[in-house]
Amino acid sequence: MFEKRDENNRSDHPDPASDTPDDEGRQATTYRTIFISDIHLGSAGAQCRPLLDFLKYNNSEKLYLVGDIIDGWRLKRKWYWPQLHNDVVQKILRKARHGTEVIYVPGNHDEFARHYLDLSFGGIQIKSSDIHETIDGRKFWVVHGDLFDNVIQHARWLAYLGDFAYTTLLVLNRWLNMYRRLLRRPYWSLSQYLKHKVKSAVSFISAFETVMSKETARRDCDGVICGHIHKAELKWIGHILYANSGDWVESATALVEHHDGTLEILHWSEQGLVMRQGFDQRHDAAVDSEMITP
Image (cartoon, rainbow, N blue to C red; front, side):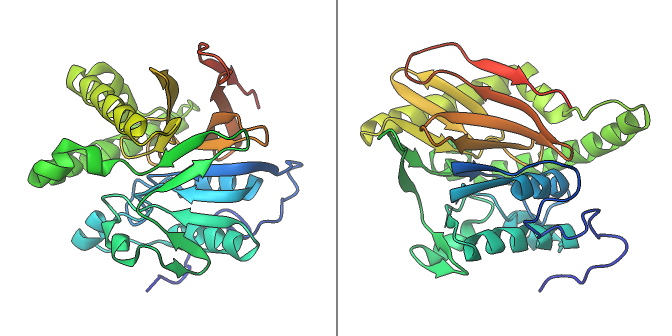
């Protein structure tokens, strides 16, 4: 099923699936829970190198895969599975073998996995959604979020059209960042920029966050942890704590739960941690972002 490793798709890591820290002097960090979503393995846009680095240097008691881990839509059109994508799968399976509780909540791009709900493969549990309780007793509804996206549910042809346009944008983004690397400039996401600038995109994101928060309140939970819209976020919406783990296509982000129950968004790169995004969740406080210098 998976391609053999060759010179064109091999990783720069000595062993990408290894959990052993290398000679860079970096130490692994252990969290209570890690949430990652929207990797889109099987698509050229998947940022596997920073993800492998993240998985290597971040461990947890529990790991949630919050949907769109594999891009079935893209694989139906054209098979694409380089070794780096296989390395990500092997890394996650290794974590499961080593005792991490791994829960996979499928999304719309990997909806084929919904045929196997409540089953376990390789130590990975597959669920439609889950209720996660933080160490401080708060209940979070964990779900991908596509079932509350009106475009996905009622105009699927428009979703496919949007996916094609998004793929084209990601191709432009890759070429742009190749040029930026030549100029020794940092990674910059064109698609993320447009999301923040285009009024309709901003309105869609706001509507999605509101719907998810209302549904969370209806389920009598303290907060929601989702993915789907490729925009990492951690904020209060009314009395509901809305958390989105982001993606590994545009932004390379993950949501983590510390051992005191605090939630935080980590922004990653191939070189490690770039920024922490969080705030005092005991109060309705402003978000505090901390830049991490190399």
